[in-house]
Length: 413
Image (tube, rainbow, N blue to C red; front, side, top):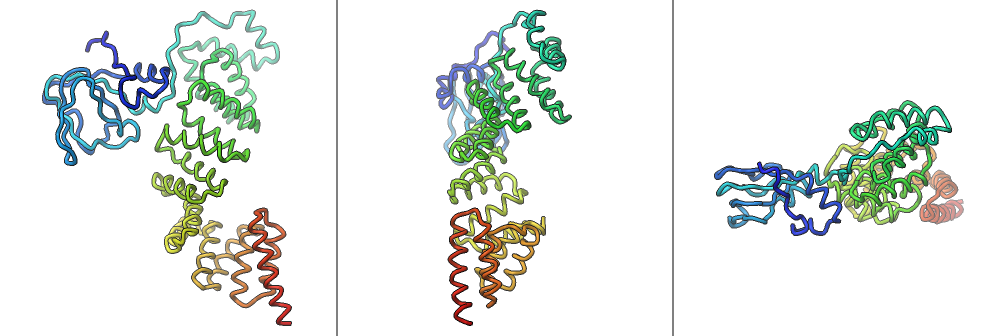
């Protein structure tokens, strides 16, 4: 291998040319140069290659049952789908002559942008140490720890020490440690991200949001920070902005199940039921063991009149967890729609036992009691839903049904 050979100019390679210059320089630094003798099978169809290849020299025959064979030459690239989405190769590649290829691995594509920095002179001189540690001995110990570790081991410690401090009930120490690091390494997006995580544990959401935003200003290619920031925005009643960050997390890490679930929750909060169902469905495609997500998704597809499919999903959830309240409620609603109020009451009563204060349950219970010709009991259920509901539409519906059933009761008397 020629150690002096330079990686290709990524600005000239398809979609890579659209990336920021800082990101291209990082990816170019992570590329590996590989040589393949004539006749070598570089890639076999169906195998997960997980890389993008760029030919430096030589020729490669590309064969697939779906397309005509073709030859790649110097400057050509292949494997975009493997790099971006982790898909297996759809073709077989064989070197037709001695060939050299630059490889960009998917794990490097998904890594945050961390460019090498030149060696620094020791930063924490005695005078500066005294200024930093004047408040408490705890801060002094942390600063000394930073100084002793030095840049070579600091990154490794940063990924473990704050978490260990937080888990041992010393989140404040973890925050102090990271505050020192952000001053010492102001260009480290990861330090700001870790600081945001600790601030969340301390219940300081606004400061955590700022820390996450500072991290993304330094490096926007960090999916976990987009996801964490989205969670805080969603909790802060900003589901539209939260959805944007969840989508960016998915774009950067397409196998991120948690981001798909959170995206569904953001769309759910915006009452975009179709988009929420699609996001939850994508999460379940990746991990069908998510019980709460399955139960919520079934409720969304029920609104699309997919009654049989919703019932099957809820029944499957109950097999795993017979006390799942949303699945019990859903089967109660399905039974009502199928004209079986007795079975509906069985499911709804079981759900009410688990969630006795859920106004939506009383709305459906009232409907079932009406079908069972128990208008007085139905009126009590509607009244509870109307008085305790927080959803405006639910309260209005409960009040309307209450008015109708009371008229029937008075008419019968």
